[in-house]
Length: 180
Image 1 (cartoon, rainbow, N blue to C red):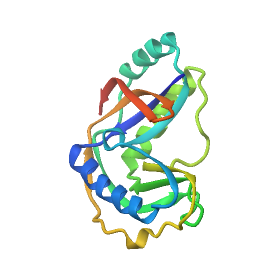
Image 2: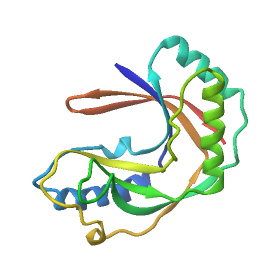
Image 3: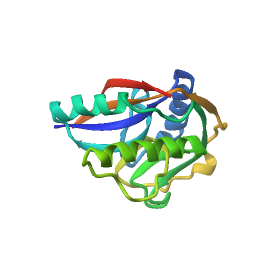
Image 4: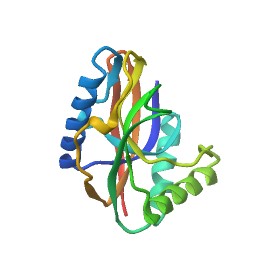
């Protein structure tokens, strides 16, 4: 089953840097069973939606295209870490900064979704890029030992995407892009 979501896709140089971080994590977590995200699938999720229905996709595209959004902004890779905690990670990640414009985009999109009768996550948004999902943990993540440098990048659009979980990992498809 496919699921719709809204996301910020990343420039190739950011994906390359994240790939290096992922490889360092892979070495640290060598005995853990981790489902690693492929670099071409790295993104920052804005909102998860519902299972895909063609009618919803069409209406959502129309609603998103009819709105205005904050101007482009910069995100910065901030910290290597894990959810819920590095000692018992479920998700291996790199967090990003949270500039006012990014939060404004997140809230604007939430308003659009709620206006369409869709539910949104009410927990505080923690922007991040997922690098892997831990299935069986054997080691403790030591992010302080992973070499990396903060990297900023310009966000000029967001995308409507769909994903499908498979035994080999998630499949992603970009359905539409919306400029800021």
